[in-house]
Length: 315
Image (tube, rainbow, N blue to C red; front, top):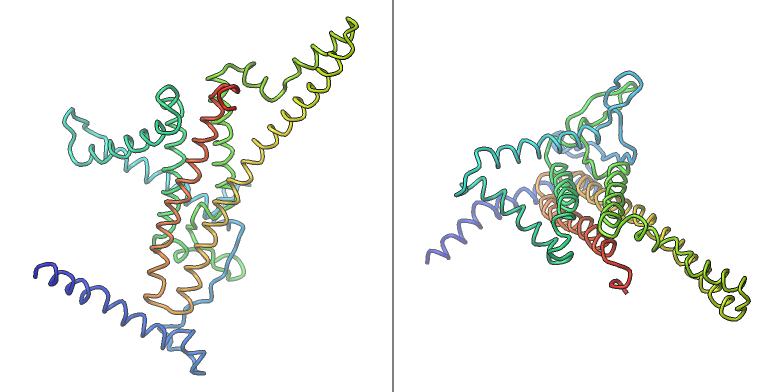
């Protein structure tokens, strides 16, 4: 009986009001009004969504433009700094609720890294992977707050520029995270294997030099074979270098494309049917933000695990 009554309360206090708001928005909003051939009431006249792919400057400091996505990224850093300060201040041996929540986050991410990279390299890889995951998901979730895109300034010419815009929808932000991911992976590989050993996996001229020495000694057959395979190894190394560089592009456009598509979807749904129609899409964006953070940090973790493993082990 108690379960049935709780379900009925949820139905009454949540789903029914949402359905009512959806019906009102459908009938009186721009979509329903266009079908009925009338102008929607002033309260339902939502401004047409405008999509600007480049970040919009909000104000200028000397010759430096402060964009709305830059402000959003600064806000993310500030929120995370305050959040972790609140969660970890006055740490005790027996943690309270806030400290236990922070420890659960750190332990969960550390176990995730250990499950892929193993115990040996987990502590080295963990900080970079954890920072990427937390920063990407925080950018995604803060971008869903109501004042993002609705509070702004009027530029010269009467154009409205939002003060905050989701940082992940600016191509520069995913690119900067991708560059840091690339730097993390390469530095971890050099630290684990040594600089000469790690770079030797990309520029391997040992077999070619051996073949040239054999040619000088008169071992024609074996020398030609080693020189040929040396060229092949060198070519494979060049391809490997390009594959590492191309990762930055794939990381960047994957995150940028998914986050920008989600923002456009919410803008269009809020315009066509105001009030409640965009609620399911906000839930979808929460899931997509988590998935994108997992993909970005997970791929960084996988590439790092490959980088810190000797070439023989990877094969």
